[in-house]
Amino acid sequence: MTEQQTNREEQKKQTERLVHKLITAIDEHPEKANNYYDLGSLLTRLQDYAQAEELFMKALGIFEAKNDQEAQNLLNYGLGNLYYEVGKVDQAIKLYNKIDDKKLKADSYLMLAQSYSKKKQYRQAVAYGLTAHELRPEDPEINQALGDALLALGEFKQAASYYDAILKRHPGRADTQFNRGLVAMVLGEPYKDYLNQARQLDLDYYTKSEKRIAEIEKTLQATQKPQNDK
Image (cartoon, rainbow, N blue to C red):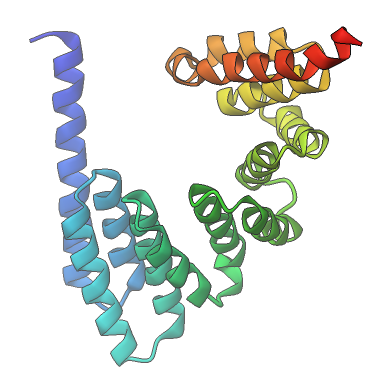
């Protein structure tokens, strides 16, 4: 068995132990919504979507019967994340909109921003992103969601400001470095350092996203041609 296979086996065993531990926690404390949320979220990460959905739905039934609003908020958020993950974005949006827990508000607004970006409805994504940003202005995920939506809308200077805010504290984000490089290209700023950083940080991400560089170069050449002809 190779070292990679051994690591994979160990990882699988650790995951199984964690699933077992969370099932035991639910059996011992069925009144705690967190136990259902943690297991449902883990099953979602493991791509066991059917079991995760069944668990969230069952738990929601339990806590709806108890009229426990705090538990329902948490479980709706977990189920919303599952639907977002599997591409049922409209169902996810409905659940995020139900959440009125102050502790989860910023997270649900962030997920609404990302959901609308998935639907290519970028103006709505920016609106929800800004609401999340008011609650947590330094959150890199919120700034990234805003930057990406603004980039898609062609609001390059605004997008740059959100990416720059992230890179001050989190320079190790390949997605931020890459998109900041794209923005710099469009704005006529030095951009190669950003793209090189992205490549070094995450080669897979860079390779998957590389065609966007060519697309922007092509667009820039097309828009510059009329000026050159004058």
